[in-house]
Amino acid sequence: MSHRNIILIGPMGSGKSTIGNIIANRLHREFKDSDHFIEKRTGVDIARIFDIEGEHGFRERESDALNELLSQNNRVIATGGGSVLRPQNQQLLKQKGFIIFLDTSVAQQLRRLARDKKRPLLQTENPRERLEAMFVERHPIYLDLADLAVKTDKRVARRLAADIINQLPENLK
Ligand code: S3P
Image (cartoon, rainbow, N blue to C red; front, side, top):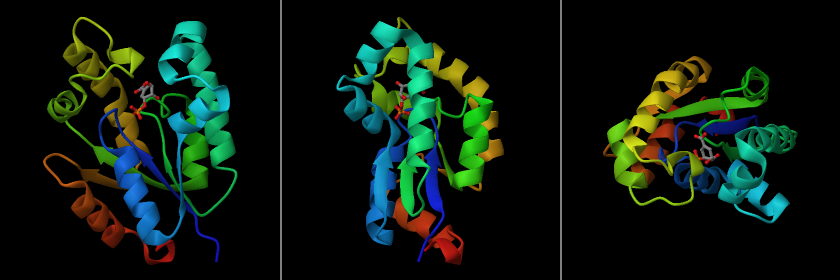
């Protein structure tokens, strides 16, 4: 039977890949991670793409990746934190899946990403300020897109994933 996709959105460090993987395993679906897909496709990591092509080049690749990943059903897909910025991506996400927002505080992001070197947008003097600015811009978009929003702070991944599965509409399980 063919099921709608399940799409995870939320900021960096919200656990989209970890939670997505668990949900996919439990529901016997294929798991795809947008950043990972782009890295495999290009043969270089996300930081290198930002270096060479800038954020605009990365966003182009991200839109292409989402189009491709969402051209099939039955998947669990972890998006990149900024994939909700473009209106065309927002439309696509809404059309192609059930959207789960992992709602995470900046404090938790900082705990998880303190020593991160892989995320170009955080390689700045003041990561907290950067994360706060992104929160202000993106949080309303995440909330608006979400079919289901869950708070992730201080929650163990397995429990959170089980909780999310419980809250899914029956026709997605
Ligand atoms: C970004 C989030 C990253 C990655 C890139 C840009 C963002 O993905 O796509 O570094 O704009 O928030 P994660 O959310 O998986 O960290």
